[in-house]
Image (cartoon, rainbow, N blue to C red; front, side, top):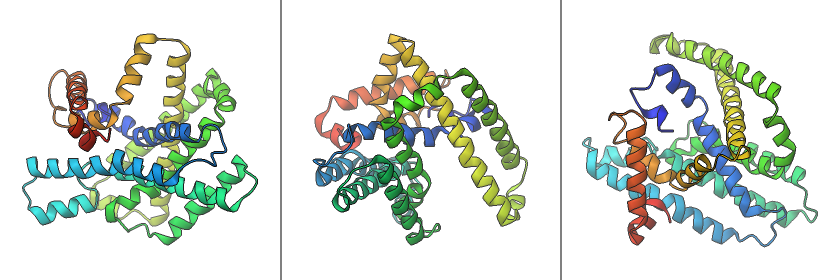
Length: 303
């Protein structure tokens, strides 16, 4: 996340990170969220309580940071800034995207339990897929109000994370297989290279003239690239945890709980030296300080 925002990092490396880092984030968020349903079925799961947790943990920080960022460094006028918040153009869109994914999953899951007496994870996946397809048909792609588009793009990754965690033992063998990872890595590098060349070898005018069917193909390739990149990142993560690198695991676990703070704070230090290390270190320190102040912690970090 930090690497992709640091100008000093190679453009190619930043593009590779960008090609999968948000899908990977949503995937991991889904895996963590699945703990709430551990183990299936979760008939006693409280929908209203989970909605309130999502509001407190994501929506409140989104609004709080939007106001702070607008007050500090926005000079285009109140109305323009208000529109940037509504359309999610202020860099905080992932709050809303994750919020929609969680709420949608909770509501559909609750509906499934209500209408189906016999609980089956496979039938739940089919039910969830049907509900998501219906949502896509009801909400047009050009509808950008409060970053609804983020839900359209990232819910499949979020839901995949939820269900992959449930079937984690079956997928672990694939993720730990060296031949599997080599094949996925090769495919990822090939597709990432194709997307990179196609995207940056054309001017904005040339991109605007690309036939619709080519845009669809490029979009599909981009999604597939994101999936392969996510699988590689999962394999690396699994390797780290299975290898018992205690210090690395402790660092990942600690920073994982600081995601919101790191994401928001690091953007103000991306151009400082040393690259990556400085913005990451400062954002961790600022997040730790923020966590010590009860009211501020609730407003800015959702804790």
